[in-house]
Image (cartoon, rainbow, N blue to C red; front, side, top):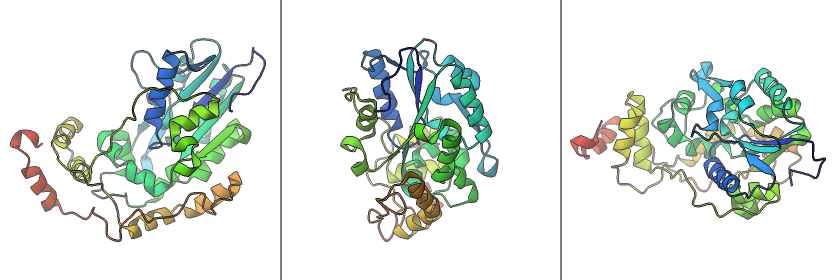
Length: 321
C-alpha cells in the first residue's frame, strides 16, 4: 500500500505520471468514477470539473531537438482546492526532463502537502513507440516529438533519449522527491496485479478496483495508421484526418519487422540495464522481457505513397481530404 497509516494532520499527494500508453486513460476514468462514487476513502481525485484535461498542466512545444515541456505551476496550485489527501494522474509529466522544473514543482506542491509520492508505469520502448502512433496522428504535441514518418516505428534520433531513457528520467524524480517515494511498475501482464493497470493501481492503494466501465482509446488499424501518418506528413488538418479514418475498413494491425523492433530497442538497452540495476530488479538484466517473437520477420509498414493514394481514392470523394 502506498498510503500508510499516519497522523491525521499530515497531507499526502500521490501523483501518477504515466507513462503514455500504459492504460493511463482507463485509469483516469476509473479514478474519476471512484471519486464521484465515494470509493477512494478519505482521498480525492484531482480533476478539473469544467472538463479541462489535467494533462494540460504540462504544455509541450517545439519539435525534434527543440521539443520542450513546460509545467503550469499555477494550475497545479489550483488543482487541490480542499483539505486532505489527493491523487493526481497526468501522463504528460512524463514529457518533463528538466531538473529545474521538477525542483520548482516539488517546491510548489510541498507548500500544500507533507508527503509526495510518485507512481510510474514503464512500457518497453519499442512497444510504447508503436502504440504511440495513434497519438502521433491525433495530437500535435506527440506529432512534433516523433514527426510523421509513415512507418510502424519512428527512426531513432538522439532527441528520443529524453523520453525513452527511463533510468535517467527517474533518477531526476528520485533526486528531487526521494527514491523511497518513487514506485515503479513494469507494464507487462505478468508483472501487474491481475495483469491490468487499473487493478494494479487500486491494489497499490489498498482498494478494490471499481466497476467503472470499459477500457478506452480503441486502437487504429494498419491502414488507418498509415493513412493518418501520411496525411499528417502532408499537413492535412486533424479534423479531416479523423473523418477520413472513420471510413477506412481494415482489421489488420500495423507491425514493424522483428529486425526493426530490435534495432529500435537496442538504442535503449543500456539504459534499461542501468534501470534494472538501480531498482534491484533481477528478473531480467535489461528490466523488460526482451522477447520479440510478436513481430514477424517481415513487417507490414513498407508502403509507397502511390499505394496510400490508391487507398484514399477508393474512398468516396466526400470522405477524402
